[in-house]
Image 1 (cartoon, helix red, strand yellow):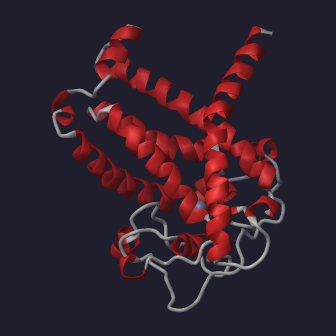
Image 2 (image 1 turned 180 degrees about the horizontal axis):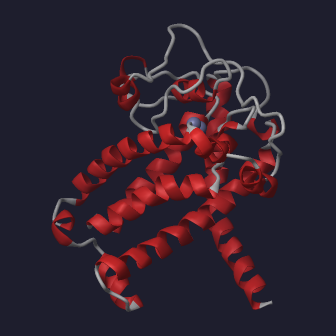
Image 3 (image 1 turned 90 degrees about the vertical axis):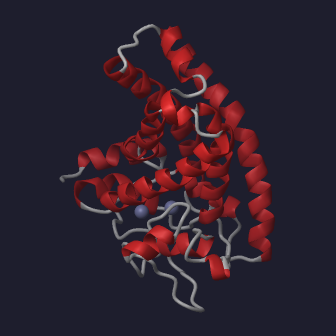
Length: 274
Ligand SMILES: [Zn+2]
Ligand SMILES: [Zn+2]
């Protein structure tokens, strides 16, 4: 009973934080997608799998918060031999070691570049072998919209964003950078999934645009455009795909057995053979 109360409380707190974001982003992308859509058709609130997307926002936010804290605490006990809760909190308050001495803005910039490089490779690995079945959930959206940005299996989150963030904290990066990096990541990941025809013109080979990431979700091509923020990585490592004057049309995966809904999707990869 107490556990149920605790979980409900955490879900409520998460909703309290997430809902204003969803409301703001929902209005912004409704207007922008109306002005310059990539694909004509339904508005985002009529997309297929809308409720699945919504539940992922709550689930992924909760999961990542706890996972980040617990993995960081475990590694702190192991590497730095600090076991007291308050001492661990103080140790990370504004970062530690030589990295914390670097100006905050530079820490934020370095984090964005290095984390994006690591996430590029993590993403590439998730497109292969047994890991694909966990990542396929992100690709299962048939209507790619800003709200699809949170659709990730916990295995994908743990070996992607969470692993990178924990590594940064262990290296000494100040958690203060997340006051800027957090909102930046939410806005950019929603923007690249939004139904927009933006290509970023001359900057297409540097920054990930909505069209660039929609090609990553397109049915007609596979294993291109893996970067999250800097398309530079794809350009450097030969996975860049931005055909001139063409826009991606159909999205999704071949697997017709992929279920809809949060819980069935979380279980689905576990039931499949490697
Ligand atoms: Zn992918
Ligand atoms: Zn995506």
